[in-house]
Amino acid sequence: MQLAPSALHDTAGVIGNLLGGWEATDVDHEGIVCLLGPRDCHIGMRLLFDGSTIQLWATGGHPAPGAPSPLPLGQRWHSAAHIGDLTEDQDPAVALYAAISDRILPVFEDKPLCVGHRPWDPEPEETEDVDDVEDTVAAASTTGDDTDQMDEPTHALRPEPKVEERGQAPQPEPQNPPATTAATNPVAEQANPASS
Image 1 (cartoon, rainbow, N blue to C red):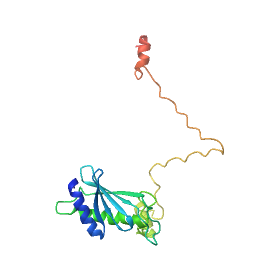
Image 2 (cartoon, rainbow, N blue to C red):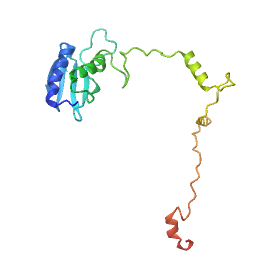
Image 3 (cartoon, rainbow, N blue to C red):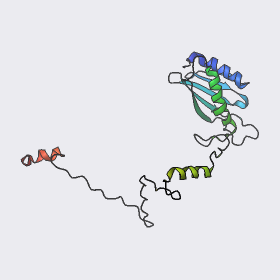
Image 4 (cartoon, helix red, strand yellow):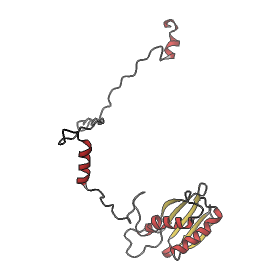
């Protein structure tokens, strides 16, 4: 699915209603639509490429009381939403609302430290029991008669780097250049035509 530039404002209006209290306004610059929210927070939207991707960004407003690490006033946090995989019966406003709710709204309260950092998500729980993994590895790597010992790995291990004495820079390993012959070096052949 692709979103036409003329449909972006209407889509933003639907998203504003879904968010409750956010007002869509056009910005007279490069087809940007902005949602104005509480505490002077803004959510910007712009079509990218062929309209199948929408750039989203949060612009910090006045922080909410008790916010752990709010997006500072005037600073931005960017994300994008791809709607190219939506079918004709799916509403792009609903998909964008989900992306904004998941990736943009939490930034106003708890700004990420870097790309991929999501401080509002709970810490991932360990899903596998370590004993189960060790049992699986042991069962997969034993042979028929010898069930108490595991096979050695068959892949090549990288050599450990040499440790130099303090104050000395590591010296690169000398490399011998490949031998050149008249067959592999046409310049040498032209310089010495008698050797042919």
